[in-house]
Length: 357
Ligand code: PLP
Ligand code: COI
Image 1: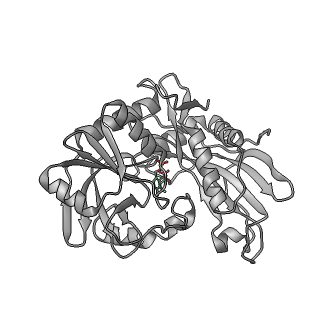
Image 2: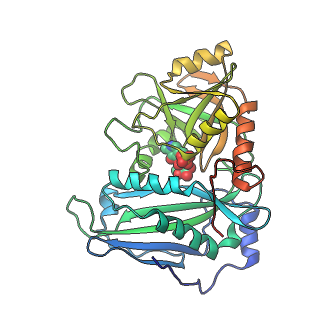
Image 3: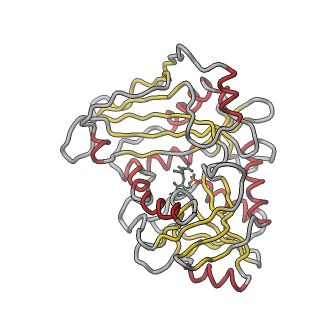
């Protein structure tokens, strides 16, 4: 598939871009272009293009606005010292988007077209990739139902897009341990539901729990298993790991309700490489609590594309606080190694990098 490139008539100046990159924050500034591919039941995927970023005209009856038929991905473009730009494990994101698409009855997009959409967009907007510690150009591919039809069935018209946004620390400011709220009132996903798909509705359903978290002075929510058995699942937008004092790394097993994070799978590999024993299994909140108190659990961290690896400080369960330590050694070492691979200062021994431009 050939992408047509339509340059922005009035791209931001080098100075404007530099001002944004000086303090990118997360998810508030967008580059000059967007990649687009359209799909219809009749013609399949067609009309691939990179065009100026801007509002999209959508019919008010477009089914995404009513029935939330959409999926998305999150990935990053990293600036290397020689000026080249790489992304991390894009085939894994392509595969996950298609898995999400199957669950949400959306069409699958060819992996090559997915990767090419990133290459073309980042080539058009390469001046927008920040190079500071923990900074990158966040890439947000997404696919949504555009057909104007109010009957409940999968749409016959769909659009795929990629937007890009310079990103620093997801939680704002300098990296520091986050405080997590344990959601007792809401679950994120249930067996047979959509938790395993990266689809907007999962995040919409998490917002009221996230509001509770913020009210309690926390930055993220920890969701427990939907059957109320006190097993930990994941955070609103990140997977979770615990480190023990005898060299083990614990993370909830993938049960079908947890999003299969690409950072999660990379952390598991890097941990094994450094001789840690990785246990993917059921972990209860009680085990976390007792482990911290006995000294067996020494570190906890959250991980994801946006969050990278962020240490977890306090876990707030109603009135009870499980006080994990600050930034532990293992958390710090894995974070540095992962960021090093992504930014080209540590050898990419697993072949995870893909050059975009
Ligand atoms: N869990 C949820 C609910 C997420 O939204 C994300 C973010 O993408 C993750 C986990 C981590 O996934 P990844 O490491 O692929 O970014
Ligand atoms: C990501 O890490 O890419 C996410 O999608 C998580 C969140 C910001 C929604």
